[in-house]
Length: 518
Image (cartoon, rainbow, N blue to C red; front, side, top):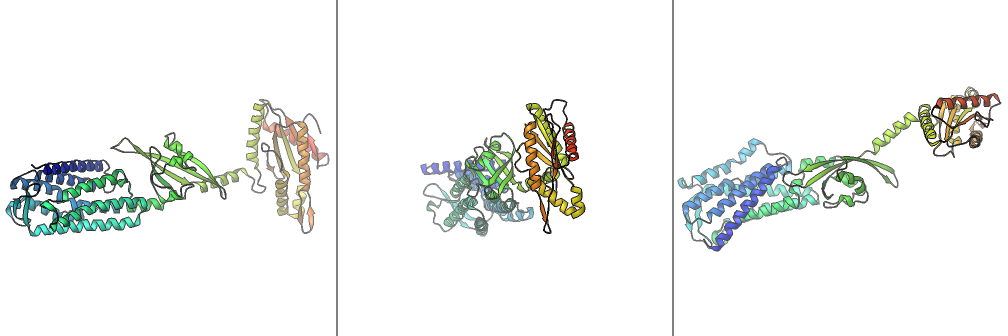
């Protein structure tokens, strides 16, 4: 065997190994759309390459014909499998069994005719060996079924190319690169077949196996560099891009492998590209880092927009492990839950707030009072209570109506309590009564605060038909250093007793039940 023949045999056998590896890789990803067809396609390429390596190493006609029979076990089905792979890949589902079977009629017929070539002239007419430039090659006249098979091959591969090109027009930049790579690979067998048919290949060497070697190399690049099987088929792509939640695929180092269009609407993601490191994103990187570090499988976070306030997000992660490699990927689903959070806050406010005045209602006020009492007991601080009751409020309702009474309550609530500390708690106790809890106060300072509040009540007036409606209030004040036996009801009772005294003493005044007296 000539040295050139040995080199070609080595190339073809390496091609068979590469095709076998690609087929095995596809088998491990069999659930991916198109992987089953991809498996059989490259298994066929492996058989074809191996058969051709045997053919060019044989020096006798019968040996060459036996090698050809092995070749056609793969070659006869490669165009159909390529076409089926493209269809499944684009449509997201395989072709129906009846249509697949129909497409297999011509390849099966071809295989039968090649195996029985010694008994007819339908495929090879007068096959013989002639001296080639590198090795003896088979020469023959083309039978009618040879032409049928060649036209069928060209038809299917051309249709597959057209479908890929039309699909590539619709997809984004990343997927367009993948489709272009596939188109380049799929074009090579067509081009080599045309050149061989018109006799432009030197030495009468069949270029198809070498075109399929190149196809294997190109598809390897598409698989492992461009993540071919990460390409979302058209149906799934439309589904992913139609949802409002952001969906990302990240590798173990935080590199973005894929994402849907909703991701671009997330803060700081407008210019996101495949290959970016998510951890380096200045807005979302720190929030999502616990997911990538496997510290948790879900996180919630808020991002403040300078004009629109806080936006709230919930992100969940799921690991995706490969069956072939030790590497892993993480899918992250990011949902904007701002509307839900705001709704929950509104519901919480409705449960805790008095609908008329906007202050804490009685139930919430008592809960907060118990909390302040416990903190004061733990910190060894005094806790002051001011109970406020509007004077002669019933007469306002009777004279002007309840609508005016409600307006007075809203005015008092909105004006009186301004200037209290953040740690102070106040709300509507019921009817025209209000309560204020003041932790860390003293009998002297609580009287000063109560006086300031009394003056503010006097300033709270409304005008009705040219008449100013003023209102006054009586104040009951109590301060105590709580111990383990002190109850909130005890503090409120003492403040209520002081309020009763203030009303009996003429109203619009402050009465203290603490040690300093009135």
